[in-house]
Amino acid sequence: MEARNSVGFSAESAVLAILAAQIPDQPQAPVTSVSGSSVLIKWAIPYDGSSMITGYLISILQSDGVTYSEDTADCNGLVSSVILSLSCSVPISTLKALPYSLPWGSSVQSKVSAINIVGTS
Image (cartoon, rainbow, N blue to C red):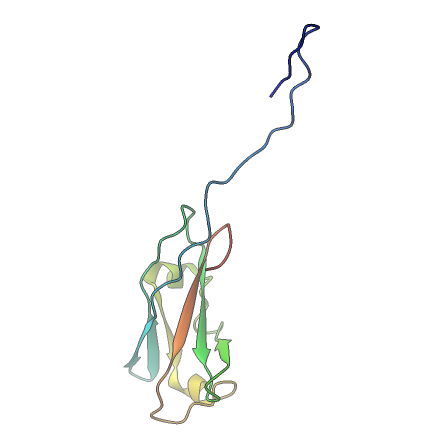
């Protein structure tokens, strides 16, 4: 941008870049199912907020019924294979151990957040 008066033009202003995007929508509740000796967590891709989704945060409810924790060893939502498949698999042995401590036969509850360049849903 330049300003102009009767003497002439000013120097140009600095460049301002604007990203026309917003944080992605919250994905719908994920679905869990037993697959062999693991629990499969699957979700649907949400609206990306006009900026490509770059990852997911996948959290699993601990036995206290309040605290959610991520299992980044088995269910890392920043890994391209998890991003593309919209799913991950967590061994039942992991879910029975700390920090989850889920008793055999209990429900596995999880939640998923989507990430893009603007932020996290």
